[in-house]
Amino acid sequence: MSLIDHPTEPRSTPSSTADAAESKWMLRKGFGLAVTSIVGLLVLMVGLEVLSGLVVVPSGVQLALGIWLGGLAFVLILLTLPAEDDGERNEKRRAN
Image (cartoon, rainbow, N blue to C red; front, side):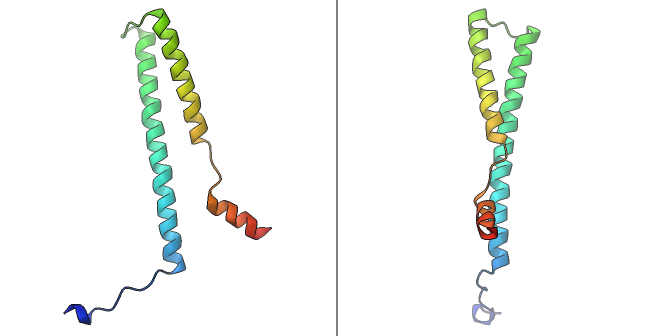
């Protein structure tokens, strides 16, 4: 078959557009979850090594490290809270 014999690609349909938007949303949420999990596990690993004595850290540095890791954990918790997506906002506006 030549290129002329093949039909042209159909234009995007509402369902294909919705599927593309859902795929983009899933990739974004999955990437965020992966980064959050990796950073959380690294924080846990460093904390456990310091607590068990495998890594010796001076007390002043240990306090600063604890404050930074606590702040980082707080930021990660805020990032993982469910956020209202634009699609949900649009649906709520249409319902009202």
